[in-house]
Length: 159
Image 1 (cartoon, rainbow, N blue to C red):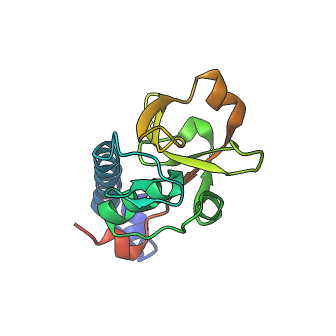
Image 2 (image 1 turned 60 degrees about the horizontal axis):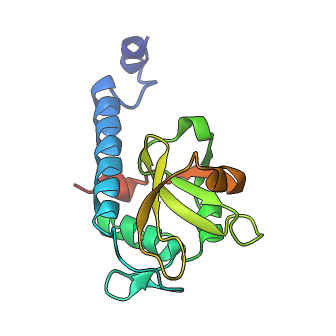
């Protein structure tokens, strides 16, 4: 079918191009997780957005995406949720964003899904960037949703 559509000019991308895009997305997700893991142990700092001074949850996510793919996400967790594409929890892939209600308001906490039911985040004052299991009762009760950062042309063209 794809071949017929391509011959008729109705398919603008070849199967090889789709596979290349899929591989690029997979590589970016892996790079996101690897870069996020590089921040393990960085202390939490309210309003923090750098490895040198510390991170809050949204500052950590923002810095990871900027460092990895050059994409600057909004500053606050709820703004990051609004700016990204909703996905079902069952469709989570490494590099997706996971949101929690930790302050009696929706989307008050964000982390990056790393796979196997786990996510990395900057949790709270007195703690540091770490990986936790989303299946723990605390996180299950507070789960608000998952989002995926849609690839843009600018991001897709980055090496």
